[in-house]
Amino acid sequence: MTTVLISGASVAGPALAYWLDRYGYKTTVVERAPAPRPGGYAVDFRGASMKVLDRMGILEAVRAKATNMGDITYVNEQGKRVASTPPSALSGELEILRGDLVEILYSRTSDTTEYIFGDSIASLSQDSDGVDVVFESGLRRRFDLVIGADGVHSNVRRLAFGPESSYLQELGYYVSVSTVANHLDLDHTGKILNVPGKTVGTYSARGNAEAKALFYFASDPLDYDRRDIESQKAIIDGQFAGIGWEVPTLLAGMRQAPDFYFDSTSQVKLDSYSRGRVALVGDAGYCASSLSGMGTSLAIVGAYVLAGELHAAGGDHEQAFSAYDVRMKDFVAACQKMAHEGAMWFIPGTKWFIKVRNLTLRMMPYLPWRKLIEQVPLKVGNSIELRTYSSSEGRPRQPAAQPR
Image (tube, rainbow, N blue to C red):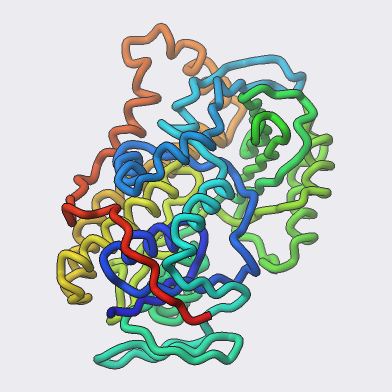
């Protein structure tokens, strides 16, 4: 039985394990965190990714956890409404909190996939027959294949492909998301404020029981410790100090948040998503950034295609990885292009463009091309043709005993 080590237990990793298990592979997922990561921002699905969720048999489970967001309102610093967007503009066809999606994927794979939490890969050594892996804990194992599904700052990519500076393309923005109190009593909706080069907003979550605080700002590259959360919170404080509306309250909530996310908005650019017996999936291989709205769709579709091509190639990883590159290339390019276009509208750089954007949004319902705001992202989401890899796909096999 072919053994596959997957690094990363967020979205792409468990999704890949789901399909590989059903094609008869023996899968192991290693995750640095001590358990599946809760929290996180809302993620959405469009086009082909909806079909994959259906083929996985989890579409209805995802729908049951959907955020069901309504219109998003743009306000000025006095809190006055200046524009709005329909739900599909920012939430796609289906939106769910990342933590809820992780829980669904983990529940569908935990009985048939070996999960190793609280550990990570320290080194990889390939030969013609397999990959020797040394874990940070000292554990040593050998696998037929290793897949990096460990995000934009992928450890597997660094070990197998080289330093991330060779592949990471900064877009010039930083983002932070935290869970805060729903102090505005938002009911399945959100509010966003723009000042030049900055976007701050809040939207309700978990049936309005809580909210998310969202901060984006334009900046040259910042020098900070990725493990120092307090210094990152200080950056957000400094960037948004003195801005009106509800910003002081959102900053206070961010400082006390039980979860906190901060990173640059970046894209990963690779000529190939594999090196020998090591391949990448999701943000590790082709991050499009949160500004694209397509990151989770890429992860779900990429996992489906990678597993399917391995199955179709009868386990010939060279043939499978080559086909995977070809099938994903144009889809990745289209999704990454959306980030550049989205940034201009979501984080306007000048007061003049904020006014133009708001006027455009107010006029949109009356314009002949009013549906473009929904149709363009959906077209990108459908810009890959999904191959059917097996007549029995989605049919689970009996769980095998796993080493723990």
